Image (cartoon, rainbow, N blue to C red; front, side, top):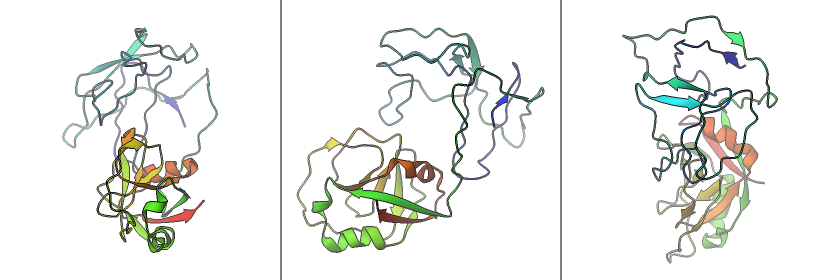
Length: 232
C-alpha cells in the first residue's frame, strides 16, 4: 500500500521480507537527465544515470502532471529532489520521522498484485526460435526435469542449476536479437532466463521464451527455489 513520506524524513529500507526484491517509487517519478530518450539505467552497458551513492540527489517529477514520453534532448524539469545517504548499518540505524499517510490523489493506476516469493516456480515456455539446435531428449529434459534457481542469478538473467541440455548442432551462432523471457543456453548447457536488464543481442541459442505473465515470479524467486519449465 502506498504511503506518503513527509519532506525531510529518513526512510529505512531493510532486506525484503518476502521474495528477493523490494521497490521504491516516487509520486511524479524520477527525472534525471535523459540519455537516448530514456531515464532508465542500463547497468550492463553503463548507459543512463549512474548507480546511486551516499549523498546523491535525484530530481523528482511533478506528481500533479500526467506522465509524458521523454523526447531525446528534452531536459528534465525537476520540481523536487530525493537524497541518498547510503545503506543504514547496525551501528547507524536510520529512522523514519513524521507520520505516514495514505498516498492521496492523483492516482494514475489501480493496485498492482504482489507476486510474492514462489515456493515452486513454474515457467510456461514457447519453444523456439532455436529449439532445433537441441536434441529431442534435451527438449524433453527441459520440459520435465526439476531445476533450482542458482545463487549466481541477477537482474540480467535467472540462472539455473540442474541437468544440462545437449545440443544437436555445435557450430557458432551469430549474435541475434533476444527478448525479455528468452531462455538462452550457454556452453555449460544450463538454461538462463533473461530478465529486465538482459542484453539486446546474444550469441547462444535460445531454446524458448517464457510467457511474460510468469516473469514477475521469476524476479522474486530466491536462490534454491525449485523451478520447472512447462509447455505454454
